[in-house]
Length: 500
Length: 136
Image (cartoon, rainbow over the protein chains, first blue to last red):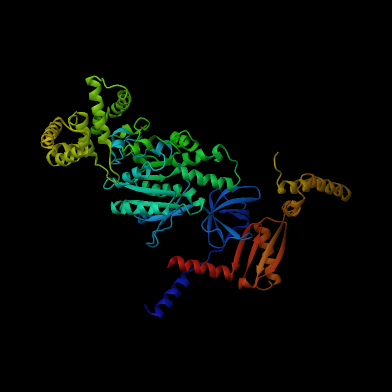
């Protein structure tokens, strides 16, 4: 491209330029501290409206007072001084969205941070939006295959559900969520992972893992790092859900993970205290419940008349020493449609995922479970609960009757079957085969330490040999008598060769 | 105890002195000073006066327009501006405060309360810069 061409192009651009004359609402910075600015003027400004500072930084209005407004600043506030001009934009905070955002890592205001250039966006979505109303919704009836046996079998999650993942630090909460994303390959699901106040090293690891598993093709990562302003952590989940809504509006199903809402509440507490809002329990502001309820209420399944599509939410909450009765955990438990409770004790016993089946529940998911899974996993939760009770009793005496012994043996095998390695999601049809073999007693005479090996061999063998059964499960979500007979035969055949 | 804003105090002073003669007003002012002293609000006096000025202007339909320009504006433009301002803000009277600023390069900028109409060359260049960088 020669110089003349550049000059010609520039001339053309300048000719096309039309400057609009309009009155702008302008205020002045009165005070600035810790990412918060008090601004005078801006009399007609709305709550959550975006403002721009003279150094180019943006902020959003949170507090509307008589003489001033409280603004949270996204970015570097060190160059903003008292007396600086602040302009109202007239727009409620919004993020750029487009299909090009898939596979990218963006910050809390939707700008790319993965060093792969700008994202061409044709639309903007407001980050604060009223959740879809009752008439637009459909009850949860389609499953989300997480690929995690204990969840798909005992705590099933449906599309449009909000299922909380709760547990102490280092119990595998994020791993569970990442596994669920990895298993969405080919499941017609878009995933949004929102990282709130997490270490950048952890985020990098997650991104690399998703990339390796080919999951970034259908995933967006929204990140507000631990080193960034609390304001960004506060808006990150809303940005995530705005991106999810963009895809839902196209009739797509979306899975969104908020990792984690405890840190989100802490960021909001910090902002609220700096804005001098009255503190309540644990110094959280009075509207901390609404903070999460309005976010999670945006997860839904819309009916066909309103374009279909769904948003399934997996919020994560980190507890302290297993205390689920603290303020934020109880709030989020009451908002969500169930919880997956992870325990440190189970984790260190080697039961991973460390899901406490007794305390975990899915309030609406059973309606979404496929028939075949419902059939094989129907009594599993009860069996496991009885096993735990018997296991505790059996420690006191050795004289046990045959029925109790059988129950204990079955329980040990069930626990073993439900163990699963990290980043190794299991397909639904494989889960059905394994659980069928377990509940029908085919594993009763397999040694506990050989269960994993048996399971692996059985799923491989049955996929090759029980073609009718597999076809029925994939297509009709249930087996016929013919398919069942075939599977039984295949399991017997495999067992013969395995026990030899 | 509820806090009284500076704006509320200013409005209360205005309402108290409205329609009063000089002697009565003096009495009210001394009471205001006593009140500010008792409530430890004397340091807020400059801000209260600023609000009082705004209240008086609002009540009497007067607006103060700050006009910033590179050079002095001629009388014709000033008259036209005052006329436009009177219509736009439904004001009875317009007070023009002229400020000279070389950095504006040309044109002028009008500021009324928290509203700004920027017709300066500097602003036009900034907008052109935004346009060219966003279309790149």
